[in-house]
Amino acid sequence: MTRQSKRGKPPNPEDVADHLHSSAIGLLRALRRQDDKWGLSAPRLSALSVVVFGGPIKLGDLARAEQVKPPTMTKLVRALESARLVTRKADAVDGRVAWITATEKGKELLKKGRARRVHALAARVKTLSEAQVQDLEHASQLIGEISKGL
Image (cartoon, rainbow, N blue to C red; front, side, top):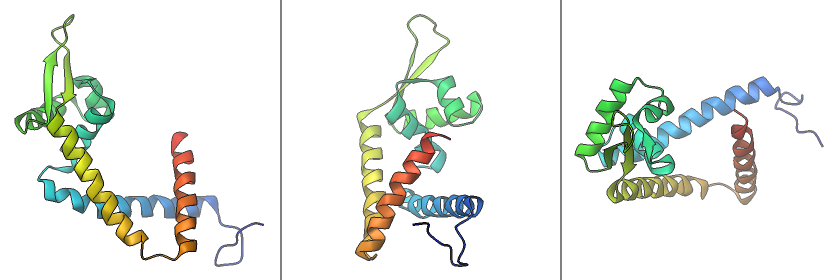
């Protein structure tokens, strides 16, 4: 059975993609408010996340992952080092290369931040009907699938 839009026609994939894009940005912005309580900027938290989940990582690779220039990443990493969230170590073979590694404090901060965001989101999900929660579960699986191909 084909689902129908509110206008009685099958949904237009471009319209669905546009709405999904807007909704995802809105959701992430709303959840980011939970991170404000940690006192770290969004760029620092994003860089820390890459290091925690993908590290140790070279400084240049971290800059590319975060889509910033190396000097900008150097400043971000210095701030994370000052907060004792990451360490930087010169490569044993090429001293010009710096490896960034998350500290236990950095890992714990991200773990607590994720738990806070998930808790806030779960509180909103609990206000939905059982059918809506099932729809949302299915939608989240589909989002995961389509995001793999982007």
